[in-house]
Structure formats: C-alpha cells, structure tokens
Image (tube, rainbow, N blue to C red; front, side, top):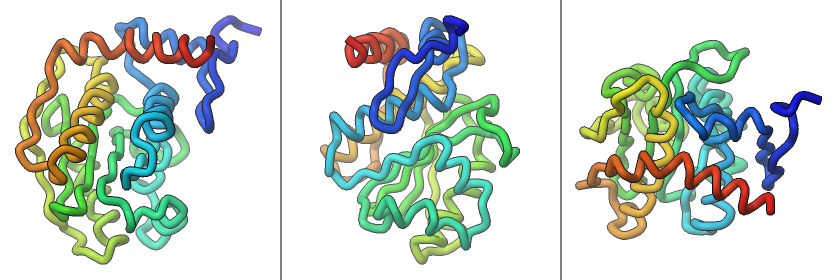
Length: 211
C-alpha cells in the first residue's frame, strides 16, 4: 500500500489519509476531507448542542446542485430549521459527479438576522454560487428565493492555495462572534497571524487525536 493511502485518523464520520494530512504542510489547496474533519471536530468536541448546523462540504455541494425539492433529504435529518446558525463551506465546482473545485469560501446563515453572509477571501469569486445556495436554503426555510444577503469585506488571501485555510479561520470567527452577540452584524476581520497558524494547528490536532 502506498504511504499516501495509509489511514491516519478515523474520527466519527471523518477518515483522513496521509495524502490528506500532507496538504496541511502547504503550499497546497485544502480538500473536502480536511475541511470536513475540522467541522466534525468542532461540532463534536467544541460547540456541542449550541444550535449550530455544520454542513460538510459534500452536503453543501449537494444542496447547491440539487433541485429545491430535494433539499429536505439533506437538511431535515440535521433539524436545520431549529438551528440558529449555519456554516456552509462552498466551492466553485459545478459538476455533480466530482468533488473539489478551485476556490473555497464560507456561506453562513443567521436566523436572528434572517440573513446570509458570504465571506470570500478572493472577493467575488464565489458570489454566484453563494447566491444560488442562499436562495435554495431560503426557499427550504419558507423564505424568498432572493433572501437578505451580504458579502462583507474580509481579509483577502495573497496566494492561490490558502482559501480553505481562510474558510476554517472565518468559521472559527463567525461562530465565536455569533455566540457572543447573537448576530453576525459588525463581524470583525480575521487576523493574518491566525491564518498562518491554522495549518500547523490542524495538523497537531490530527496527530493528537491519533495518539
């Protein structure tokens, strides 16, 4: 067996291989597996039962590409309508038979604000995909096809490969801000030093859980 295909960690529904973990060494684009694992960890170990819907990348992709009539298949089991906050990593892949894409951003929904917020480290790159997804989720919630939607300014990446790292940092920031304030209004920017620390932090977490 190739070393890259060796299983490094099995954590709840996440399975990481050596090839996944190597992406954290950079300078590489983070894949669905790493982002999904991080979401799994903070949902199960950090923000348990706090009314947050963590939509893994593969679920977000299905929602974006599926007809509106199929959204209940994905969202009902999550009790989505009862959640106060939803975090949805979004990529620009428009092929329903493949994973991946070339750019990640973060779409969030705050029930208290009744508004979608799109944080994109390459401003505007995923705007169309984010609006499509926001419209479908809003429709599922009984709202309009063109819901309240904001794309606030955010820290921008200076390379072509750190978008997934920005998504993880923006997710941390959004959740902490929402739990403090009950809203996503006046969300402050993430800091560059947080982005620079994130890859080694996630890699250390994986090694810790595998110890």
